[in-house]
Length: 484
Image 1: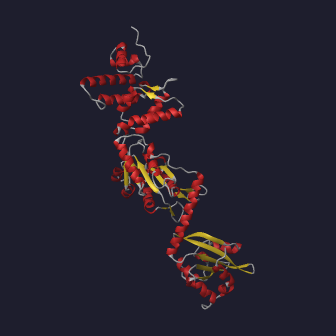
Image 2: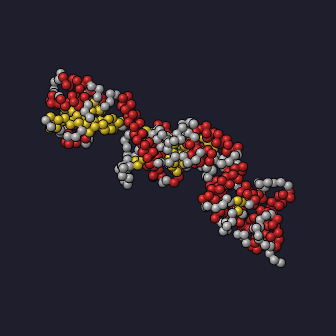
Image 3: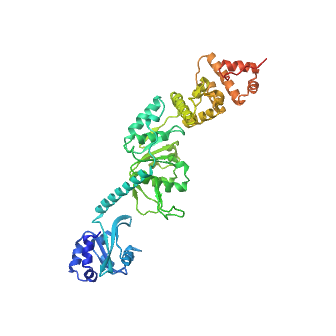
C-alpha cells in the first residue's frame, strides 16, 4: 500500500537526503505535512525529520538531524526495513506511554536501498486519542468474535430459578431486577451457601448485557501471587514461567459482558489498589505491557464477609468498598425465611431423583418437622448435602426419606431447638410431648438407632421405648415391638 508521502519521498529521495538548502522544494512540501516523517540513511543516521514528527516524539530537530535513530528509538525496526528492503506498514507503536500508528518504508533508487522513511499518522494528541480509540474498538470486536467461536460461558440461571415465595426473597428479587438495568457495580452480601452466585447469574441474565459473556472468578480459591495475573493477564515473557503467548485476564475477557468477583473480600490489599483503578477507568494494566487496555465490563462482587468491619480493621480499602457497594444486595439466610425451606427441599429432591434416575422421592412428616426445626447454618448448600446423604442412605427400592436416613447431627441440633421452644411453644402438654419426642430423637441419634442402647440412655425399658416411638411416629414402618 503506497501513500502519497511515500511516492513523494521516493521520487525526490536523492534530493531530500542530500538537501541542505531550506528552500529545497521537496523539503518545504514535507515540512508542511501534518503526518510525522523521518528519513534516515542505511547506517541509521537521520537526514531529515519534519516538524510534525519532532513534535510527536519530543525531539529537537536541530540535534536530531545527523544523529543516529537508535539514540531515540533503541533497536529501531527501520534498520531492519532498510536491510531487507521490505516495508513494515500500519504497526502499533508505544512511545512514552502512548500509542502511535507507524509505517516504515525502504527508499529505493535503481533497486538499491538508499535510505528509509518513517511515517507517524497523527496530527495532534486529540487525533492520536481518536485513532487509538478506533483501534481499541477493532481489538474488542476481534476479542468478541473469538469468544463467540470459543463458546465461552453465559449466565446459567435467571430469576425464575430462584425458588421461594417468602416476603424477604420477593423483596430481594424486585430490587435485583431494578439493579440489573443499571451499569453500576453491585455488591451481593450473604452467608455462605445462600445462593449469591445464583443471584449474580440472574442479574446478568436480566441486564442489557444478557447476550454477552459472564465471567466468574473465585478470589478465595487462588493463591495471592496468582490473583493479579488472573484478573489482569500478562504478556509473554512478563515473568519467569509466564505462558507462551501470554494470558488474557478476566477483566479483558469480560469486555462487553459481566464479571463476577466471588469472595472479593479475599483479594490482597496490594491488588485492591489496582482493582480500584480498573473499576474507575475501565483500563487494565496487563503485567508486562507498557500501555493499558480498555475493557467495557459490568462488575458484580459477592462476599460472605462483613466488608465494613474489614475496612475498620484495615483489611479492606475503604475507597474500594464504597466503589463496589454503590448498589448493595443482602441475600437473607434460610433460617430467616422458613417459608422457603419446603419448596427448596422439594426442588432439590426432584433434581436428585432425575439425576439418579429414581422415581420421585418423598419425605415423612418427621423429616419435614426436623427440616423446619433445623437452623441450616450452611443454608441451601448444606440442605443439598443433607438430602444427598439421605438419598444415598435409602434402602434398595425405598422411595421415602425417613428420620433414620438423615445425618445424626441434623436430628440432634433440630431436637435441641425444639426443646428450647424455638419451633412451636404451644401449651404445657404440647411442650412436654415435644420435649419427650426430642429426647427420643437425641437418644436414637447418640445410639445410632440402636434401640437397646437408646433405652439405656433414657433409663427406660426397650418395651417402653418402643411405645413412645410409636406414639411420636418415630418407629420404622413394619418394625415389630420386642417380644416379652
